[in-house]
Image 1 (spheres, one colour):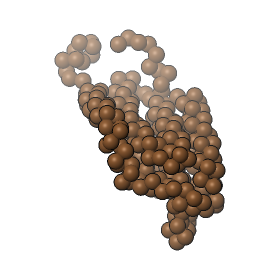
Image 2 (image 1 turned 90 degrees about the vertical axis):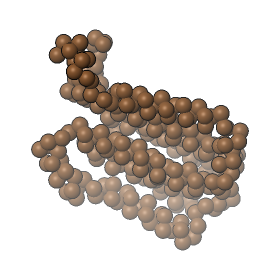
Image 3 (image 1 turned 180 degrees about the horizontal axis):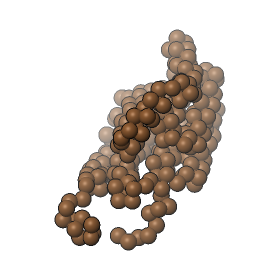
Image 4 (image 1 turned 180 degrees about the vertical axis):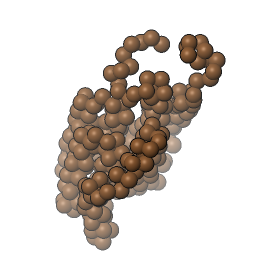
Length: 102
Length: 172
């Protein structure tokens, strides 16, 4: 029974990861790109926890905590970049920052 | 038990799909919070209550507040007030509201009949996670603390407004 749940949770994490990847590909607003990256990180964490539940080990949950810390660091830097981009370019369109002028 | 898992999974997929297709960032954020809450319920079913709590507190709480803060910071002024008024109309919150109501019913059902450990799922509590985290994975904790420090310094450096000195150098 547990194994069935773990496998279905893995399938769910694959679906969520694919949705996040799709979001990164179709959206050009930098806030939405960051949000889609969060979706993908969350799906990866779900995969870790599902695998940990399958082996009845705490390691999956430990890995989820590391992913959580990484997501927090990533999103703070990413949002600071978004603020700086809005300050300099007056837009949030990721394609507008393509000139590499420094 | 089956119903809780599959309903939560359906809510997670629907709300995530709605997240990446919204035009308004605040609406997308609402749907993403619903997605995080449903994943938290799935963690409960998988026998991971500590991680389920962390998902709500840190992801849905802290990280999403950071997003909301930046979204609100980027559109100040009269149009923001108009947007606030628009956010309070039913068609904005009715979608996330229905999905959250489904999750709430699942939570009540689970609290009544117990959703952990059903079907032989072994519950791995905070104690075991804590001893594993600070035992074999201690070096990982140290690395995570360095990563968070780097993130803090980086966010501070990138987030500040440039000084007049730098603006003069950029020719403005």
